[in-house]
Amino acid sequence: MLGGPGDLAIQSPVLRLVAFGIEGQRYALHLPVVERVLPMVAISPLPQAPAVALGVINVHGKVIPVLDIRRRFGLPPRDYGLTAHLLVAQTSRRSLALPVDEVLGVSEVAAEAVTPPDALLPGIGHVAGIVALADGLLFIHDLDTFLSLDEDRQLADALEETEK
Image (cartoon, rainbow, N blue to C red):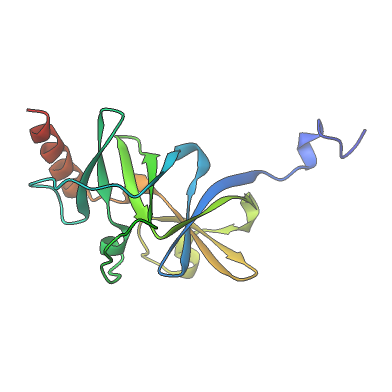
């Protein structure tokens, strides 16, 4: 039977993304890297951490650094209140938490609908792809490139100090 659920040859690959909002702009992470969404909690300072780090949180005994997308993209700072959320996601090196204004849910996007970032905005960093939706753009983030090598090393050193 053509076109049935077992006929994968004619089905286009679909990306499952967790969409979130910051300052009215929509961003997303690939669903497999997202561990959980938490309500905002108190963030403890992390001395010697890179400027993009807000501090750390404790999730079930695990210390997780909180990185601020706003700082990375030059957006105005925000005092995150009780309505904000933390997206906890896994990179190739560690778990990270990102404060976001709102979590919009899981979206499915056809893989061919994703435009490589260099095709639209050459030199844009930290973005794995851009999807044009009927009501705006969705920027898909690559958390493995969120920190520079120096920032990653600085964060690792700061986290190591908290364990002593």
